[in-house]
Image 1: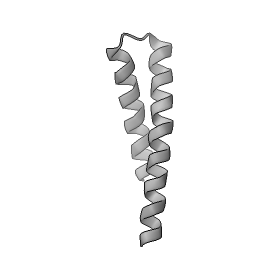
Image 2: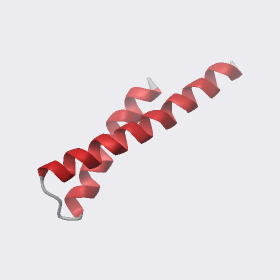
Image 3: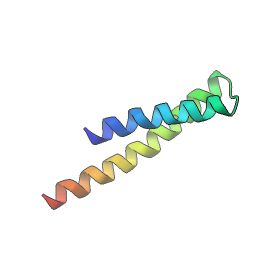
Image 4: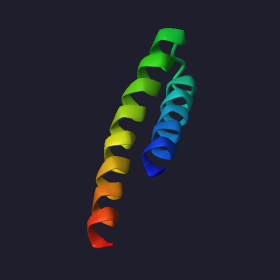
Length: 54
């Protein structure tokens, strides 16, 4: 669940960051995908750490 939330939050964050910098549609999509992947990996690591602790 954390991974999915991190993916969605990352995509929204990346899209917004590209939009504020004046990027076109391709830039916004690329930023959204890269941020989603990065935050998805962070969410995966957090999920694994929580799972190992319990």
